[in-house]
Image (cartoon, rainbow, N blue to C red):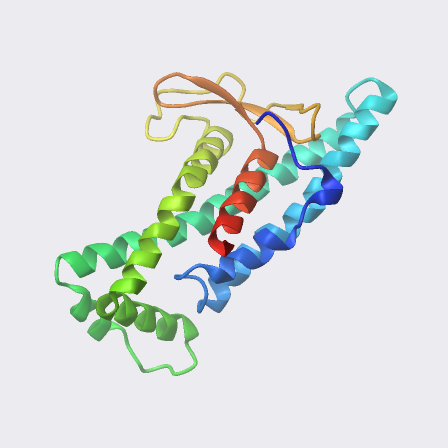
Length: 222
C-alpha cells in the first residue's frame, strides 16, 4: 500500500462490529464473536506495531524482542482471519450448491431438532430456509462475498506462505524465507515476502489486510 491511516484516526470498531452486519454472520452468534475477536486484537497489535516503529527509529537498529512479538502475533492474527473468512466462504458455497442442485430441502430435513439448545443447528437451518426462500437473501449473500473475496485471497496468500511454506494451490512453489519479516517504515507492521503459484513475489503485511477489511466494511455501511 502507498500509505496507511494514522493510528489516531483509525476506527477499530469498524472491523469489530462489521462482521455482525454480514448476512451469513448477523444471526450466527459464535461465528460473529470470532469475527469480533479479529477486530479487538487488531487494535492491540496495531498499537504494538506503532510502538515497534518508534523503538526502531529511537535506537536505530531492530529491537529484536519487540519485532519477534509483533511478528508472532501478526501471523496468528492472519491465520485466524483466514479461518473465519474460509468458514464464511465455505458456508456460502455449500448453500449455493445445494440450492442450485435441488438438494437444499433434503439438507434442511436432515438437520436434527433433537437438541433445542444447540444454537448452531438452529441458526444453520434458519439460514438455509432463508437462502432457499428469499431471492434478496441470496443476492445479498453473494454480493457481500464478492466484495470481500479479494481480501480473502490476500489473506490466503499470506497464510499459505507463512503457515504452509508454499504458494496457494501449488505446494511445489515455495517462498524463499517463510515467516521472516522486516519492519514497515510507514506503519511498523512486519512486511513478509510472499510468492504466488505463478512465481510472482509480493510484499504484504497484516496492516494491509486490516486496512482492506475496514474499507470493505465501510462500503457495506454506505
